[in-house]
Image (cartoon, rainbow, N blue to C red; front, side, top):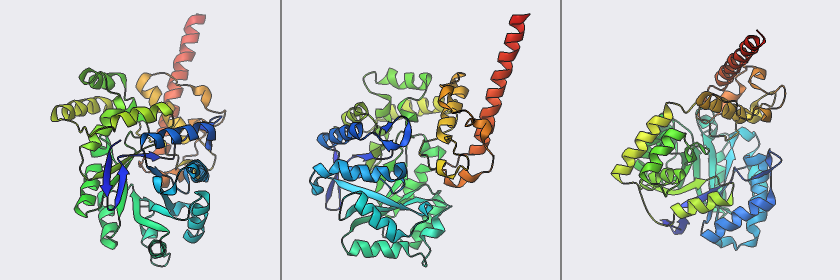
Length: 383
């Protein structure tokens, strides 16, 4: 495992993002503790020492599970990071104390303001709410070692935030070779670098999208490096960025941990030739990628009728890319795209800024076209 120095700490270049632990019976918020413990044990044995969770991950079960799973290891053998999210609408004092209990710890190595974007930036900067003052007091008391923030903010908002307070120890941003241009990740990275703030990376595989790509794009990468996984290209792209400290991956199987650990065994940034190959594959993929949903599920709690929005978008992407109805039996009756109220409640919660009502409307139109084709086919067969 590669390690990189951060102040006095030696932190693994690969960290565990704790939003996507395996679950029970398809319930996204009920962690399969037996399988998830195996993943933690595999990660610890491989040398991964950074674990990132948040108050809202899997409705709080992520923090609780980590408190259980890491209890078997010495507290100084890993770094624990969690976050406060304004969306929770709870007093930060209550949230922080709850998190300490859930995580079974007396302090957090890293604590972050969660999900900086145009929806919440003013709340985080609000002196009356006093979020920053509270966290600085906890840091002074030794209950927080390093203070940071996670961001989905566009460059102008990020710059504004750092003009307000410019003494954060680190920042966590969405960064991958697709979002380098698509989501202005390049500009965000450069702003943080100019401010001397080390970068942690979330969504290096964009919710798993870049671990598979599509057949044509994946073939381009495999032709260049037959023995490397498609995922490894994304990680090696990030190794090419000197201000990247640690890359978080939401690994939900032991095999994913093993594959990623293999990639991070040594420093192996992409060569110029490989960067050109990656750009070619990305260009091919973008033409057919559908909707770039990272399956973070932030939108789900806001839906008044409880639609599983990431699942619906996954179905839409498969229908659009391959022309096949992918496992439509997974969608409960009355919970398909036609059920969307078009109310827009979800829009403020999507880090990717996806027009969710528009996508679901387009999905329903696609399905209606398919149903019409089937009706016409049956009529022709009867004739």
